[in-house]
Length: 396
Ligand SMILES: *Cc1c(COP(=O)(O)O)cnc(C)c1O
Picture 1: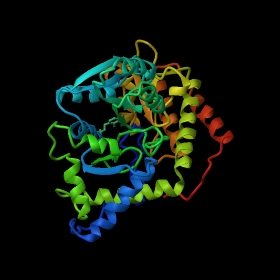
Picture 2 (picture 1 turned 90 degrees about the vertical axis):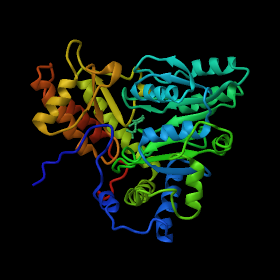
Picture 3 (picture 1 turned 30 degrees about the vertical axis):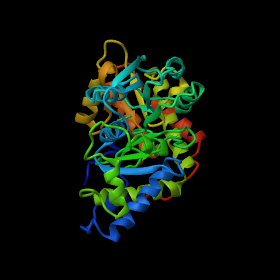
């Protein structure tokens, strides 16, 4: 008997059985054409998930954080100016990485719970006549606050100013779960990892580079070795890596992309939206607020839920783990103790979501919050019953 419950953290996600098996494979020669039969389809699959025709896809043995470093160190030089908003823990950590690399970050402080201030970006870019800003950073989905930002609006801000800065987008908790349009939004570097929308174990940093980003790599001087995309591109040309690739994870990624594309990206996004709407119906029934300040910001992959003033939200997470063997996400940074997070991305069904909602209710009632057992579950059930799933394929 396994007592494994689904996890409700916003990554790593639950792993479909077929993907676990795909990652578990015998050793092959990672400099052989056989390896190329895994690597190249995986890169093609990622390109399609990014909605790009021509992005150069690079996959490093690393995590999303290594993806940030790949973007910065390949495209920028010490002292370069970059523009970034801080509206949560992940945007904060990317800014911190820029500063540690000697970049000059213009930080737009933004309330946690708000989206990227594209209008402020537009003003700052329009005022930068000398084009000193070399890159604009954007966190598509701020996982700490459950806020989705409008990347198209950031692109429009750049275009309206006629500004040539590169657009770097952290899509770690959105790509493969929420609509992401690399080509349409004019993204120059997109960053993600294997353990969120791709439903795999952690271990891969996954990136798309535009032609302009590749051009920028030729003059950038920040040091990079392990994350050098030119070394990587040379390796790929020979069905290889500059070092030992994570073959099992790449095999999993190849299959993960095939699964997402077979379901249909729009169906994948609709599934995430539907499940998220059920969770949000439950939160409303509990009389609680989301950290995200407006409906257009609501994330379809994670909900950060504010608990009543004076109550330490982290207790819900600790109690759920100790009493029910269920994992929720804690609040991070500025919202530590103020929110708990329900992750609803990756391999998840409405039925699984209902179990998470029911568990959150038990925890809140156990800890003395004024919650009627079944209230959130009933609200989510109502939503799921009146909004049937668009696709109902045999669970993988
Ligand atoms: C998870 C996450 C990261 C960090 O990724 P790691 O794989 O843990 O390094 C970065 N940005 C966002 C938005 C995330 O959700």
